[in-house]
Image (cartoon, rainbow, N blue to C red; front, side, top):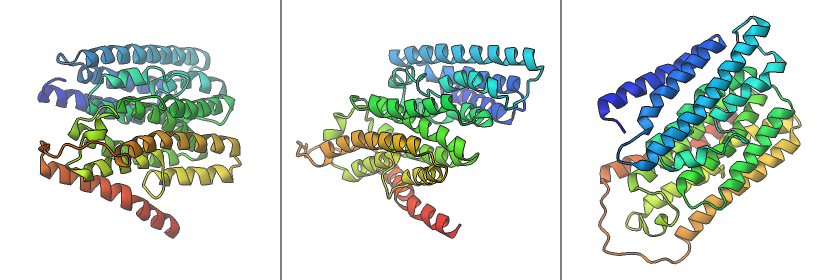
Length: 342
């Protein structure tokens, strides 16, 4: 990771590339924003102190470069035929141009690079890859998404791959990356149902990710086995972490259930019964591997070291815990009240 001044520079150019893609009115402008975003993020990934982060940054660069070059080729091909750069809904080109964008957000069956890349990164870079870096491709996909067999296959495969892939993992980073693949299936479904519904889903997903990753970075947690004997002197951190994980899985009455509740209601109204059944079953599988970790840590008798001294700053603990608990527990109640008033 570069020093603070360099980090601020690259974060500002990363944000400017993101805004350029969001504000673009042509495919070429959107592609330029994606490239600025990518080239600003690569220096943030690489570190001289960690060999795995350098390998992960190289993998990430190769995958994103392949997706960007494919996107540019399809844009130029579309322009050559239609003589336009504009973001129009021409049904024949929708599926072709969505393929490199789906690769950028790691939607199945283009998801294979995400777990290996995330495994070698710090928690801060994991958060950027799993949330910020998906905003621009998701927005571009929402411009041209229509309900057809191709997008249904992507949704169902993303839901299944994200659920089944995390079952045999012991690394928290890989578990969160497979959970992200599962949530991509939900977000693509919300794009079919309404233009702004996916934005609500993405914001609540980002809040859950912030809660989990701030706690895991604070206590330096990377594997499931580390959670057995860690945080025994401060049980509230352990409870808050697992509440955040259950919220990410979509368990009521936590905040993460709210967007899934709305999505299921809209899918039932639009008679998308098969897809909704697949998504609900996949969410149950993701909840299974979160609850498996929670049961093993909280309910099975394990050894506790009584003389462990806390090395975490208490003021930081209290701020993060209060933020996470208040958002996750009272967010659902607030959203339910707002929905009933609406």
